[in-house]
Length: 453
Image 1: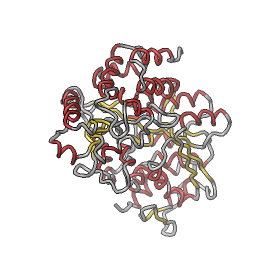
Image 2: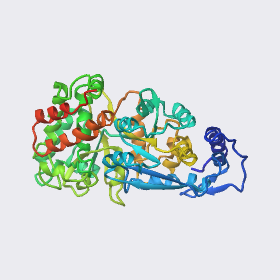
Image 3: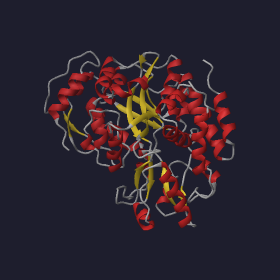
Image 4: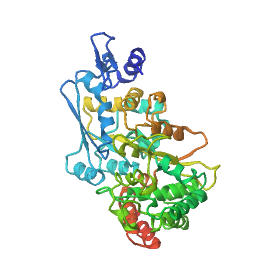
C-alpha cells in the first residue's frame, strides 16, 4: 500500500517536531527517499529532529535471526531521512548480559526489554533514562493498554514495541485432514485429540517441544504454565500469582503444573522428532516445531512469532504446510489469551536516541514494521496501526486475538515477575522439572527465591 505522504507529514511533524523542541520544516519534493519496499517517503517531517547526520544509536535485544530482519528493515526510513545509523545487536544471552553491561558502564543506547520485571531491575540501577514527553504522548494515544507495563513506581520509562499472542498451537492442516482430526474447542477435546493421535500413529508423537534458549533456557516451559494457569485458575487468580498475593507453590499453580505435565512429561506424547521427554531441555525453541513438517509430531505450542522460524518456502496458511489454532480453554465460551511484547528502554539521552525512541513509538513505525514484515511476527502494540498492512496470515490472526472484545488478555506472568524469579528461578526450575525434578520440589524452589521486599 503506498504511503500517504500528507498523512505522514502531518502525523510525524506533529508528534516528532516537539522531540527536540524545534519546528518542522515545510514539505519539499527534494526531501524524498524510499524505504526498504521502495515506498516513497516524505523526509521533510524528520527535519524536526535537527541535524543528526553521522550519529549512531546502538540497539541491544533478544530478537535474533531470522526474526531480526523485519526490525532492521523497519528502521530504513528513519535512517535514510535523518542520517542516523542504527547499530543492531541481537543476543540469545540478552537477559544475562544486559545487567552485566549496564553495571560495567557498557550499556547500549537502547534495549528492547522482553520482561517488565527486567525493566524494574534495570530502573533500580539508576541507569535507565526516562523518554521524552513526545514518547509518552504517543503511548497514551496509541498503546494505552500496555503503558502500565513500561511504568515503574509511577514513572513511565519504556514504550511498548512489538506484541505477540502466545496461546497458539501449530499443526499441519494436511496431517489433520489425513487423520480425520478436528480442531479442538475445549481442553478436554485437546487431551482427547492428543490421546487419539498417539494411538493412531505409533511412529510419531502428538507433540514436539523445545525449551533450550542459551542463557534463557526454560522460558518456553513457563509459557505452558502461564497459558494453563489462565485456563485452570482464571484471570483473577493468575493476577494474584503474578503479584505474589498467593505463593508460587499454591495449590492452583500445582494444578496447572500437573496439567502441563500430562503432556510434556508423558513419553507417549512427546518429543516427536527428537527423542524422550528429557530432549525437550536440549532442543532449541527455534527448532522445536520443525518436526511438524515431516510428520514426526502433530502439534507444537508456541507464540505467533514462531511464524518466522519455519524454513524458507514453508507455506504458513490455513490451507498451507503449517497453520495455528487457538489453544482451547476449559470451555468453548471462555477465551483467555496469553501475550507478550518488548519495551524500549534508553540508557542515553542524546538527541539521536530521543529521536529514535519517538520514531519507535509512532504509528508511522508500526506501519513500516508491518510493511516490511515478510515472514510474520510483526504485530505491534500500536492500536492505531494500519492492520490492512499485515500481509502474513498469522499476524492477522494474532491481531484478531488481541482485539477480540470477548478475549481475556493477560501479559506473560514470568515477564511481570521480579527478574530474579521470572527470568531466573522460574526458567531454571522448569528446566529441572523437564529433566526429572518433581512438581512440589520445583514449586518450592521457585517460591523460596521470591524477593522478600
